[in-house]
Amino acid sequence: MTMKTIKRMAAEILKVGESRIWIDPERAGELYDIVSREQVKKLIHDGVIRKLPPSTPSRGRIRIKKEKKKKGRRRGHGKRKGPRYDEKDLWISKIRAQRKFLKNLREKKLIDKKTYRHLYRLSKGGFFRSIAHLKLYIREHKLIRKRRL
Image 1 (cartoon, rainbow, N blue to C red):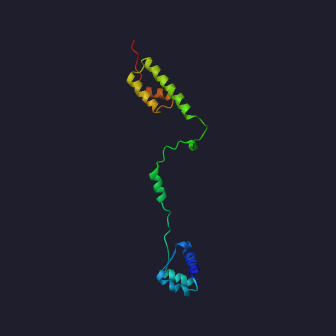
Image 2: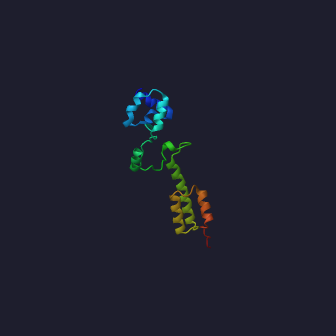
Image 3: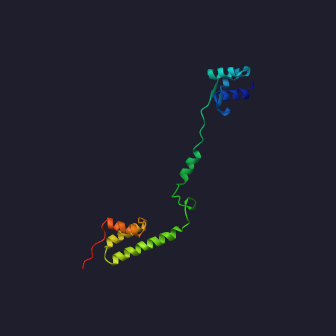
């Protein structure tokens, strides 16, 4: 029997692919007088034929990729769901409204300069979703001061 046939039989017996079959090169001479599956099973039992551990795909390429670039925020067009809005326009309209509201509060002397600056910075950082959220924050933190007559 040829080595190819023996390898195929061993793969069937061990329930693995032919590439995972290892045959001892020193005892390869014994294999040519094999005629049956029983003899192949005996060689497996003796350790002349073994199954190799499964090989895992190399992670080298991935490791190199990770070193090259970080993933970033992933906010591109491909990630967006729902209707197409111009995010910049939404931001501009929202921030202008919030700043106008804050300016109004400062002019009416309902908040002092320090509080105004603090709230201005928070709104610039995108902390508030809307003017309603800004009002809620001011109310919860008791930032409005009573006007003196």
